[in-house]
Image (tube, rainbow, N blue to C red; front, side, top):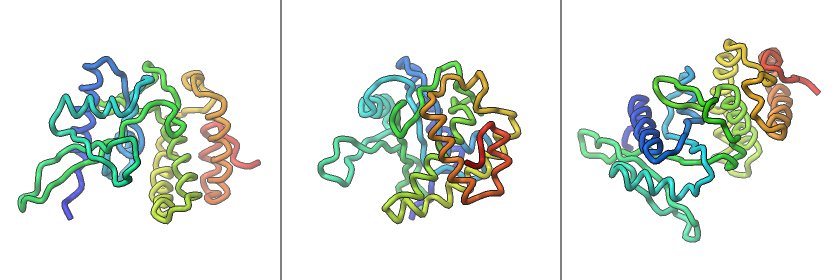
Length: 223
């Protein structure tokens, strides 16, 4: 099996995609594992997840990257009736000639309950745009509940990695003195915040040692 992308390669791919979108007039930001790593979590990402902050068709955005840089390429999915293509980035082959690639997911607000982030609220880490820290943590929390409750075994197994990321992000977020009721987060919709609160209850029920951290961020830990 070919080795996965390095952290440096992940950042390089992210930077190239951000540059192409910027040249086309689109603001964007990283989220999921790449954004987590840029904030300081220790797990190395194995793909790139990028949110384009516009009401644009994601298939068009994928095609935009593939047209602008030959390293980006599109592959049909295994499902014969799917109406989308999978975006990859070609990486340098190994010394023995094994092909390497990195998956790149392009999303827009609304997909997966992603909030509509004001461009001025996007943060920068190592020169790359990232989702604000507390909303990123809450998206990770949503991923944990989705994986935990999934009917698919491979999805359920992902919840353990989610917990590792959440534990690190919780500590990082608490150190920033960020609160869910902060004016800087007033753009978050009430439904998003209420949904996050319900997930916090579930998370604390399974991991009661995190209760004080969630309370530090302005959530209720218990019903």
